[in-house]
Image (cartoon, rainbow over all chains, first blue to last red; front, side, top):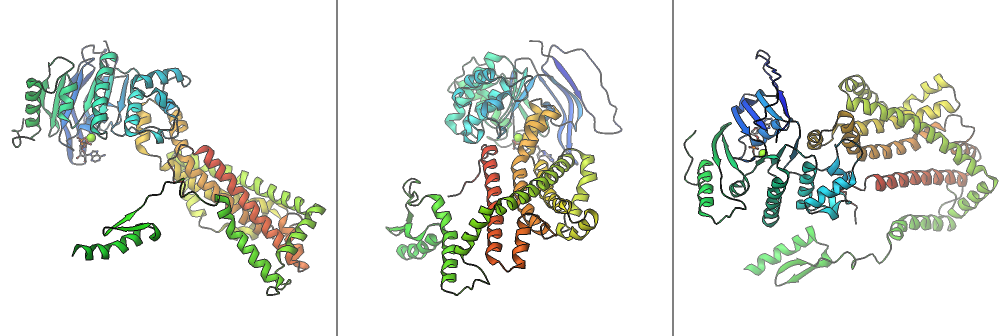
Length: 263
Length: 295
Ligand SMILES: Nc1ncnc2c1ncn2[C@@H]1O[C@H](COP(=O)(O)OP(=O)(O)OP(=O)(O)O)[C@@H](O)[C@H]1O
Ligand SMILES: [Mg+2]
């Protein structure tokens, strides 16, 4: 899984040295972030942050609201270049946001293949929609989709690009509990089939432990804690190890026994 | 105690949210029965309800003129108007006049619309276009365009040119303003989504920006058409030798109020026709919109 890697280094400080080294592709990592800082005015939301994601690895990112998870994800999606530091991401990447962000003026299937080179390929769109279980909704306007269907469409739109890195920003947050469980299973399956690296931003600790190889906890602009999850898949919520992992992560999030010491 | 409270609340709730006949008092609770749309279905078809207002008005007008309350030299009655419309139609004068006026509007709209939309796209998509065009347009639009009639006459005489120029001037601004606003107000989250999908700049404009601006552009078109008729009426006061305005000017000379009313009705019908056209365009091109369609 040698992901092709794009170098993406941007420096906003005028006096800071601009280093653009054209190093050959790094075969080892799908995502490599070093010393990433992002300021909004005086506020440093990301502080000298380091992250690595291996090709095909499923990483979940947890953290309190407003700690900068979406900011990091937007930088990895190349939507925000007002940064200091080094960021390397695969050229082939796709994003699914919390809101599905479908183009309301395009039929569902056209949304799925929007931006792919060549003429809109209906068969390809149908295959992708079939994969997320809504093949029969291909010819409707996005306005008539339910929340879950719209979210699946957004997922199909991301996957049809066959990304090496899939960025998911709380894609299930707006779904009801039952639909969310189905959507989580779906993402798990799709990940195993496609084998892309995934960064999943979520508020749901259980979701993180259920799906991820590794869980990152973000706090004060850095990755404060990292937990590798070696449980066999499919994972069982009732497993004591599962419960222990979840408990420890909740501790790190400062949810259970007051705030954990700052790392 | 509780019954007193509910009694004081119920009527207010009924007033505020509920058509009073639908409010049911049950165990002191203000309730409303939700009627299925098909059941409350219009005893009358929609168009009948919409037509009832104008029909009543015409009826009133007819009664006023047959009873003599409205003398013919002030305003001819509907029957006289209809018979003179038929006469004008049979001589072919009416069709000729309508055609001339319609062509004026269409040419004016084509010129004004093209200029307005082109400028709006340039100003909307390019920073330099915005700097050069927008300030000028925003300033120019505050000038009532009919105030330019004297200048237009001096520049282009009293033939077709000033009439068409007036219509073009009038229609350019509403289209410019609305298309520009439409382009500038495109949902930025969709632009971001487009970027993550790898859309090039041209593809972004074609697949995201322009479709997003379309609803606003059609609103602009509707305004433009309204202004176009208004400009036509003003423009045809300039020494017209053909067209509805000419017909009206001649009728004025001979105090033919019936012909004047025929012309007014034609103006109104043409206005309705273009409004219908825009509505149809909206239905076709904006089918994707989760818009409110009314009840
Ligand atoms: N464009 C911006 N301008 C100014 N401040 C911003 C901007 N975008 C984000 N921020 C700030 O950066 C901080 C991190 O925002 P971010 O959206 O990354 O949080 P988050 O971790 O995703 O939170 P949540 O879990 O609630 O989505 C917030 O305090 C936010 O106010
Ligand atoms: Mg967020």
